[in-house]
Length: 313
Image (cartoon, rainbow, N blue to C red; front, side):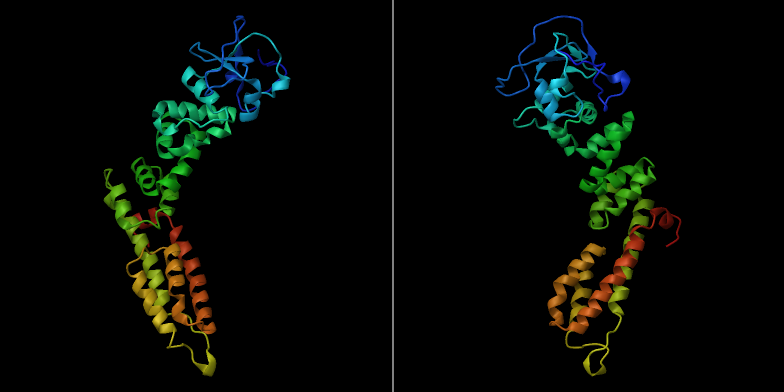
């Protein structure tokens, strides 16, 4: 069976990547991709290294966007020759069956990136787990110039391994990726970032810049806690000594040993709210405190590390 390439447009595939049709007439082999698959095969996909795979045109339609609808296929006994090798084609076909999927963490980096390209090209969404190892995929894609895969894997790697990605991006001089990753390190312990950076040469200056930025965030939090904006209480009092002072003391104590980030700051504030004893006016003070710090900490967080490297805080 074959695809009528004149009437079918595979939008995800560039013209020089379109499958070729073999003029050889051969028997359609049984399915090798499905576990105990008894479905009849009605189409042959031949890999670039000459291996023929019996497949199901309906499965190709259901599980991917890169193959035509089964009813639009022109029936014949010719093979479809794909540009991918047999390892990749077999993996693709395995993900086009209703069954437990292969463990992609066991794939070698070279096969993983080839498979990632094929998943992207043919739109095999059931195989999106190819990005379960985003840092490794990014490294391989970056070395070989696969920009689309690199962009997606990089964004995932930043969320999963921010410190390692931050350190690696700095080591290769990529300030764009470095600064994107640095934004995700604000909630990490100082030691974790230090250990990631010290794997590479010339780490002290960037760690110093990162640490200065962290300390600036800490100072911003503590300045606000030491001087909260007053709210007039009953009786003309500017502060409520019975609840506000114990609350602030509790927050200061906890923030002294906590990571100085907006996320941690809000968590500490929320944990100390019982100290306010339900005082409406003191709750207004706290809400104003959070709003003012949200803006200030966001400004600091988005400040480029380059400014700290240059000594401009």
